[in-house]
Length: 419
Ligand code: UD1
Image 1: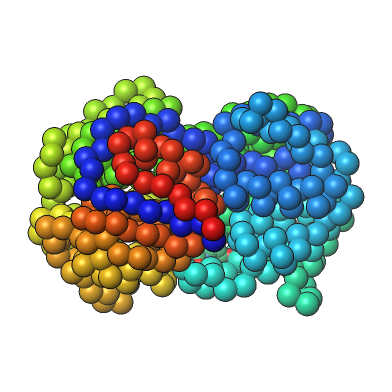
Image 2: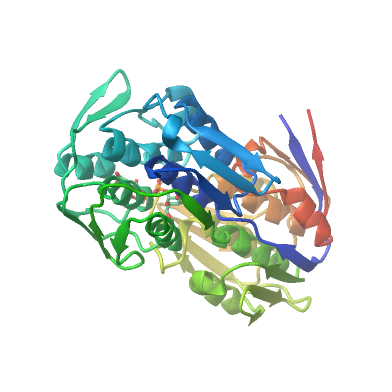
């Protein structure tokens, strides 16, 4: 298993180009199953989760071709299977995103249940309940969700909890449903909007994405087409924290500042100077030590759960005491325990981490446990004195494209040790 070795203490300074959003590319790739012809996608990031999704599509008989490394062409017309097998789903929960399009278009789907997950229970009951409300027959057999429907019908679905992939799955299922589907208490994340824009570009009729009520008028077919995936707001936020935690200056390019309001607000509170352009954000810490911040995660437009681990690393070296309250997932504080091994002074109290910043963390061998936890360990390593070795970085490769190249470019001392 590859490792990352970081010699900390270098102030980052420079520019970094942001990749396409993982959490947008995955649902859009699943959404290609609804297309009537070939779809060409631009700005698809090179990530393990994208590779897994491509494997899943190919396993179903879908033709996937890579062009010049940045564009992917998907032609779903050759689909022969409607199964998402356990060995793929267990490596990537987002495989559940094929459920909606498969039932909506082909009338059948056998998708393995994702099972346990490092950051909590993460059930998919709302995906299933929504599809049932649209007329699908669903049973759980041998660990698989087995869904069947002649034709889904539009209905009003009120989601109990705001769920991102749940909203996306139901939105995709509704594209071909008879009549109108209303999804209430829908997730408002920018990635939901990106998926709706993609589907509309192929001929779907979706309104209200980005608001709590999404209205979908069923259509008979979609065309093929092309679409460019939005920039990754979590990758953007992570590099900005890298600037802040090292007292440096980082300009993120090809990003969308409007998607990061809550994160930028907290960076300002931490003492960073933030400048924004049409498609870039610059953070300048001017050599200052960050000030600890209080954070409470919430669905968009609140502070994203996918950024709390990175801010936990920031609080670990900040002046003062900061709290991080996680309201979306239980058990999402494994990074905190690893940060303690690097000298962080923190305690976990239920769903809250209370952290009193220390002047300096010290490098240590640490273990990545999930995607965003790994990012926080990289950030801590950048700020720590001495060498930090991060094991199990396949988690990082699921969500950060070329992380060591990008950090090297910003002046970090980082290398990948292949095993
Ligand atoms: C997505 C993102 C993930 C992010 C998360 C929250 C993708 C591929 N992943 O995950 O990076 O951390 O949103 O912003 O986009 N829930 C239920 N029943 C369900 C579905 C969800 O109770 O059927 C609960 C979950 O346990 C959790 C909350 O709803 O407490 C939100 O989860 P959800 O938005 O569904 O997360 P994902 O879509 O899996």
